[in-house]
Amino acid sequence: MSKQVVVVGGGVIGLLTAFNLAAKVGQVVVCDQGEVGRESSWAGGGIVSPLYPWRYSPAVTALAHWSQDFYPQLGERLFASTGLDPEVHTTGLYWLDLDDEAEALAWAKREGRPLSAVDISAAYDAVPVLGPGFKRAIFMAGVANVRNPRLVKSLKAALQALPNVTLREHCQITGFVQESGRVTGVQTEEGVLPADDVVLSAGAWSGDLLRTLGLELPVEPVKGQMILFKCAEDFLPSMVLAKGRYAIPRRDGHVLVGSTLEHAGYDKTPTEEALASLKASAIELLPELEGAEVVGHWAGLRPGSPEGVPYIGRVPGHEGLWLNCGHYRNGLVLAPASCQLFADLLTGAEPIIEPAPYTPEGRLG
Ligand SMILES: Cc1cc2nc3c(=O)[nH]c(=O)nc-3n(C[C@H](O)[C@H](O)[C@H](O)COP(=O)(O)OP(=O)(O)OC[C@H]3O[C@@H](n4cnc5c(N)ncnc54)[C@H](O)[C@@H]3O)c2cc1C
Image (cartoon, rainbow, N blue to C red; front, side, top):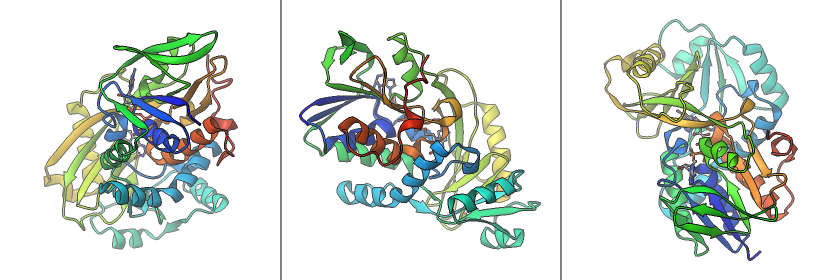
């Protein structure tokens, strides 16, 4: 196809959308109002699983499972082509003292996932630094985390190497250009950028942009704060999660602890209150962190959507306009499947997953 596709927003969703489309369409232009990959996709924890996968709808599960299987090869492919390793780190994940353990185990059986109850003493043997007092544990083998700041960096480098892709950073899109009900381009601060198709993947900002067409997209910013420690490389062998808070080990000994869930508009200021609360959770999970220095503390804006089900597909009544947004707490895990499904829909290929649950039709006000 010799068409030009403009992708609005260069987070993990926009970048991977562009990457998948580049092999199939003539020209791809990615516009980001800042630097690509510096918003939620940089700020997230990078767990390649929803935090409590059994609490989500089959729609989220279908995307998560496809992506989880695909992540290792995505990581290897990007590393081989760019020299930047997204560090897909398979550590498994322990959930401690869950209230809905029975539901979790029933879900795993149904879905064929390697999740099982383990004796709490086995959890302490596997993770000797775990805090005292936990009574029950379940463990899912094979769960990985991806070093998301490196993932977006390597995606950026991969796109820069493609002759038919243009990255336009510091290029804010302020609206859409329409002719007879068809979207034919986007409005930038420097003028109109024409397009055969426009993909809205502007994360938490997507709802604002769609409102310029009089459409209500229920995607809103949900602030999340994280803290970072630097430990010995073998300090934490697995990811651990209790009471909604988790610790994620990177390969080099960095440990991330997150996260808060706040409705604060577009404010991304890290707060003292969140720092104290995240530190307390970190120490409860891993008491040795008590004396450790917090080497990083930041906030990002998740693209919150009802039940975390993303919008993937055409915008009805506006030919040429497409959505790939609203991935809420799971945009990193869901990205590979969402962006492959998106490319299938735009190019008319057989979709990898049944697209109906994600279609914007009937879900916009
Ligand atoms: C603290 C925290 C922890 C998280 N942990 C995890 C996790 O462990 N696992 C997981 O799967 N997910 C996690 N997430 C969620 C995940 O980070 C997001 O779902 C995902 O990054 C969303 O990607 P995106 O590309 O849609 O949005 P973003 O990365 O926010 O990208 C949107 C881009 O659009 C650009 N943009 C916006 N408006 C415009 C405009 N008008 N013109 C041009 N460009 C524009 C922005 O500059 C931005 O770069 C976490 C998020 C947070 C905040």
